[in-house]
Image (tube, rainbow, N blue to C red; front, side):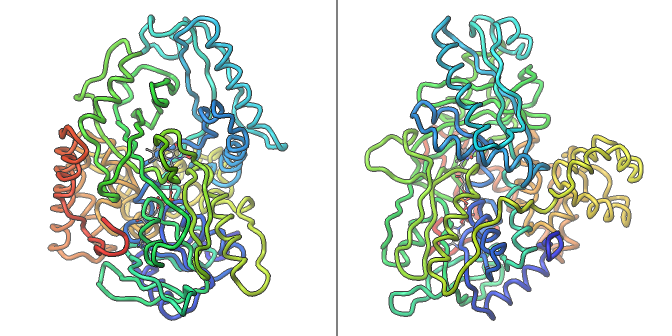
Amino acid sequence: MIPGGTGRLGPDERAAALEALVTHEFQVLVVGGGVVGAGSALDAATRGLSVGLVEARDFGSGTSSRSSKLIHGGLRYLEQFDFGLVREALTERALLLQRIAPHLIKPVSFLFPFTHIGWERAYVGAGVSIYDLLGIARGQVRGLPIHRQLTRSSALRLAPALRKSALTGALLYWDAQVDDARYVVDLMRTAAAYGAQVASRTQVTGLLREGERVTGVRAVDLESGTELLIRAQQVVNATGVWTDEIQAMVGGRGSINVRASKGIHLVVPRDRIQSHTGIILRTPLSVLFVIPWGRHWIIGTTDTDWALSKAHPAASKADIDYVLSQINRVLAVPLTHDDVEGVYAGLRPLLAGESESTSKLSREHTVAHPVPGLVMIAGGKYTTYRLMARDAIDAVAHGLDGKVAPSCTDQVPLAGADGFQAMWNARAALAKSSRLHVARIEHLLRRYGTLIGELLDLIADDPSLGKPIGGADDYLRVEVVYAVTHEGARHLGDVLARRTHVSIETWDRGLSAADEVAELMAVPMRWKARQVARELENYRAEVAAERKSQEADTDTDADAIRLGAPDIVPVLANGAGH
Ligand SMILES: Cc1cc2nc3c(=O)[nH]c(=O)nc-3n(C[C@H](O)[C@H](O)[C@H](O)COP(=O)(O)OP(=O)(O)OC[C@H]3O[C@@H](n4cnc5c(N)ncnc54)[C@H](O)[C@@H]3O)c2cc1C
């Protein structure tokens, strides 16, 4: 059982955390609230350390909500004979799927069409056999079916959308997928439940030093403008593509160089591609995934160098054209720009090698200890965040006086995970007692796991919260309120883009749902009418800028257009960059 309950992250808890951050000296202060920072906070808290965490924007709003949302070993690393890396990731996949977050992670199958006769089936089949085998290594039960070879006609039965001439046969294998943004929130809540003091919209602007040693950080609560001095024995820099900026605060000392590579995804309605399975295609440089996502498909990704805005990487028309052209190689009915409901772009924090092209750089992570009191962690991928966090806190432990317990996060289910299977099995009964349709209960269970009771209680108190959101009827009104009271959402975009995914799952990118969502947020956020209007105006401007940037031909133009819409809570120019 988690000691601090479910780790509620409402506005009052944020205020209390900010107070605690300036009145205590922490053993560990984590900078960055993506999956690696949240994972590090949980790792440290569950070793019995006192922990603080600050995030400049919304939790998970950096790379960790913009990924392909796969928990995978990375089939293509096999071609680089990186068996160790693949096995490690597949061990994590089994752990996350079965113990740590069964509510948020689920199996997904991919069809790999062959375009050649003979050798390709043997070559890919051998690779996927190794992939399957690596997944059951070290006594781990993989929890996923073994791959299957398919004839062309059985492949076409599974994926009728494919053009007959586009394949000679196929192979079907299994991996796992995650709601990446929600995973960060659950990770953060679990860390808070174990005692971590966490605050979003709080930017580190400098490091406190005593001689060489880092003794904490200088930060700003961006919501109020208040300056904070946070003292800590060890500071962990988990800022992903912003790593170099924190590193620069110690005079650029440190061995980690992170470079950003942009990847974009398109979201299209499920009926545009008739298939009972995900699809993976080889592309000239990498691979392209077609991933089932509720009533939609996510299609991506790209891999191009990016040196412009880190907070708002923009997808250009060229990026979108590229993804469409790759998927259209195999579809019987090609997709056009008009089929695209949503677009998102993210930046991979790659460890920089000197002259390699971005898609060849290793996804492995690295930990550095450039000066006493500062630990840097970077690289890696979503799937292996727990190992990154473990390694970062191992480095922290070296710098702390006294003995620190080893990492135990392989034994720590996230908030909402414990008892999930039993509750899933009881979903029909839950539907009956709550008077919600069983499909709604399944939706809530997949998003909140065993915390569903907290939402059902809110609905019992106010039945209007059990109604769908107008213009985004996959979601219930209660989810908006809960996002604010329990999940750290503070602004309209936090709810529309990350607690829900309305911004990429609706044709109008959430514009028609925005008024109702803002009104629902206003009560727990204690917003006056003026703030509601500001939130709406800001969200509309962001959507307009994103749409326009996606018509631009080049990255530079797309970036300039996207930056035309200012952030609702702007970060400061020094420190976390733009
Ligand atoms: C297109 C794409 C597809 C991907 N697909 C997959 C996949 O399918 N599977 C997989 O395993 N991995 C995938 N990845 C990789 C994975 O998403 C990343 O490795 C991971 O999310 C990085 O997490 P992070 O915590 O290091 O960085 P982030 O999530 O970016 O977190 C860093 C945080 O630090 C904050 N910050 C920065 N400066 C400051 C400051 N001064 N003060 C306070 N906070 C600060 C930022 O606001 C940010 O939230 C993908 C990546 C991309 C881009």
